[in-house]
Length: 316
Ligand SMILES: [Zn+2]
Image (cartoon, rainbow, N blue to C red; front, side, top):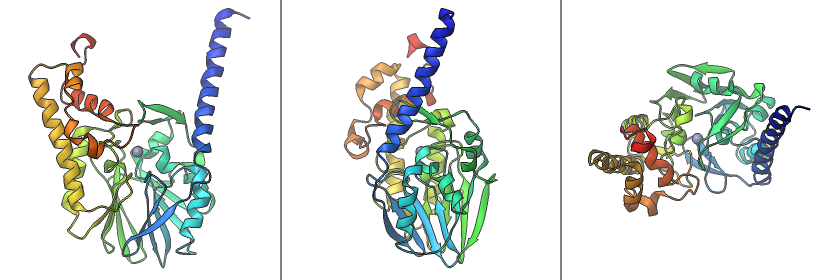
């Protein structure tokens, strides 16, 4: 066999096996995880895994179960049995807040149980890509979800679900974590699920590959702060606690402060390596840097480039 063909073949086999091993090891750690269900307010619950990742919102009422996000596939059995602690109702609708695997991985299993999946059309279009991008730990790719996991119904600006006496609103926000981010508001229960635009475990994760932006993150948080009232309960995409409007304001203030610091440094002519060395996030690291997969090392360059920091290698 020709040497170059063998090299290509070998690389291909390595590529496939590394994809498989990533997927298998990721799933091995998820089987057997115990989920918890917490009553949030009104008819809304939060279903959570240890560490508080991919928090699910659940409206449970006379019409059955309406879910916001679906966690990972190996957790679906545990997800259903956790819901069964509260209700025997059918899981009818699932709305995905964005494309990441920790929010859509359980879609197919829930479809098999009769659920219908909804998402913004930008999120569904990402199910059609060959691989799925995940931003943490410097960025990686996972194999794409099967066709049956794709949202069957998509919407453009917003959609309203008339479910168990609530007019549940799911609506697109400016491109923040990804460009398909939606918020879900349960007005009668007064609960807001913000997907991964709001997290209390790290600096905001801005997935540039999937269309996220700093500017959109701030604009989306403005929208959430406008919508939330003093009694509104807020479910973050990641984080152990149920939060409120004050915590959102604190999160936005932290982002604005860091943005201002990086902007001043760029105007002073500092390059990225100098800005990193100056540690503009230092006052905030102890509060917001609890996720080793996304620290100031990941966040500050995103801020730097979006504010107009140099893109040329020698000018960085
Ligand atoms: Zn995410």
